[in-house]
Amino acid sequence: MKFLLSTITSATGGVLEGPDAVADGACIDSRLASAGMVFFAMPGARTDGHAFVPEVLALGAYAVVSGGPALPGTIRVRSVPDALLEAGSAVRSTLEGRVVAVTGSSGKTTTRELLSLALSPAYRTDSSRGNLNNRIGLPLSILNLDEDARAFVLELGMNHAGELLELGSVARPDASVITNVGTAHIEFFDGHDSLAAAKAELLDTTAGGGICVIPSGEPVLLEAARRNSLDCTTVGPDGDFRLVSEGSGARIEPLGLRVVLSVPGSHLLEDAALAIVAAMRMGVDPVEAARAVEGFAGLPGRGRIFVSGGMTVVDESYNANPESMKACLEALSHSPGRRGAVLGDMLELGGRSTELHYEVLRKAACCGLEFVVLVGPGMRDAATALSGSGARVEYADDPEEALERLSAFPAEGLRLLVKGSHSIGLDRIVDVLREGVRCSTGSCTR
Image (tube, rainbow, N blue to C red; front, side):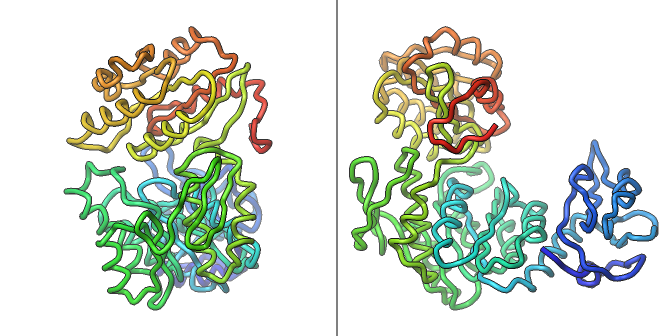
């Protein structure tokens, strides 16, 4: 994304030490800085970006946004984190296209990618990268968008009330998609309605008369849509559109439109339905949108499948909450042959942690698993839920020990689910299994 340094300076109330220029992109990691970019010298407990200001300027960066001394090529500001947010908001105002925001308790990143595909038949589309969805990641995403795109799909995350109001005020979406209201981050909320109200903050920042696609059965979201005069569509069992299972795929009714993905799971089909309906509401032919999403092969840590030593691995290691755990276990239960799972603790569940871990393992007990490797105290404390399931239960304190436990089971013909909250580190198991990998979907990356 190209933007003027003066635009950033004005938005942040900073002082530009040097001439105005057109920058192309932004970063907060000095290793990613290159000529023509703007580097935001973010403070940090272990690493302070200000230590790299001379190095970045020597690389030819057009400017460094800094809270430090006046140096040629710097934009001096009071707070670099606030300046990044203000810069993202300013550049958002220059976008010539439609901005779509995606949030939800689970499935945000997958829905973002599916929606980008679904919009592609009618729009040149760009979107957030990776997991850039917070007050640092969102403005960075905006500052690095393709200015020639005409649809911009931005992911917004939250775990406290007020966050989506702040992020939505930066993104200022023309359309919004909320995937679901689950129990992720329930530790920080009084209950379902207060969590739904926090998700509804996105609708409060969506342009009046704009579009929103939300799950059915969520009155708090529906009231927010009405309050903000949004053109609202619901998707779900009692919604305007609903998903009906059909073999390896599903139909979106009342469209009668069949959806098939190359990765299994009803939760992924639900995300696809949201994406197709949202694209349709933005003028895309639903048949073309459905065809566009068929090639989706999952994302690293979010459903990508690969084969390792005769074992088929379902990589869901990026994160976990009770709803996504149960959905992945349900998908695993329909797989032929031997089945096993490495399940890590789910975090930020507060006083409901024991109850929700138990619910997940009760689901696992019904999936015909040969074994379950449990990582973390939450899973260990709920392990009695697996009694009588016939599954062999192994315990591990960390991912490395889980790998040792896993080695006791023959790999040939095994389908293995790996899933847990990000900080549990189950991606380290996936990294080891990926050595010498053969991708089963044709789109895996090392």
